Image (cartoon, rainbow, N blue to C red; front, side, top):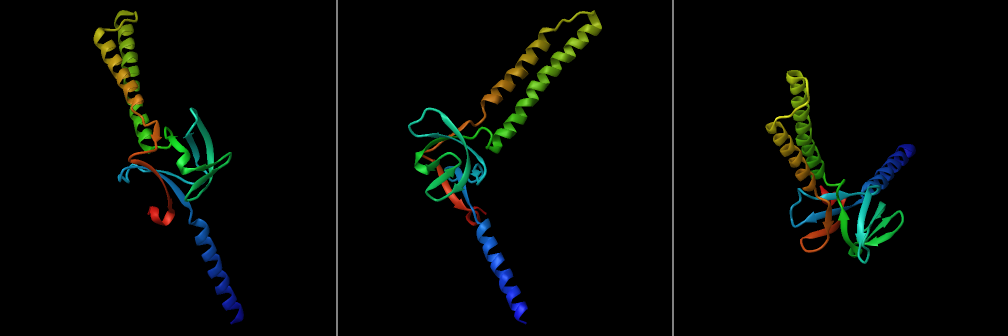
Length: 171
């Protein structure tokens, strides 16, 4: 009976400690009250930021997230010191826009390839009709326009805010 009680006590202690270890803080970037477009950072993520007073972005990795500061590998940063955050590779919407950008580029390239193959088969020389060139240029131009629509940085201030939230509050 003594071993059984000790075993239960040990298992309870392990579960208590383990639950406390997994309860970590998250850094949330949010515009207004829209929770769908939240960008979440956790310990170990790459963090590219513009610190107030600097005119260049700094790339670092998050070691610890606290309510008042973020401990990075090379720096300890207060949330009030952050002016902007580069979100090019972090925002999920950018991945969707990247995938959509490939479609017009590929369509324009395939149209040029098909027009070239057709002209070689018909005439034996490489010639493009004005319709093929116009359509291919429009598709490639659309790809460049979509590429420029990506979200590049998150400027802090106004409706855009940085918050630190525990995992239990996030869900």
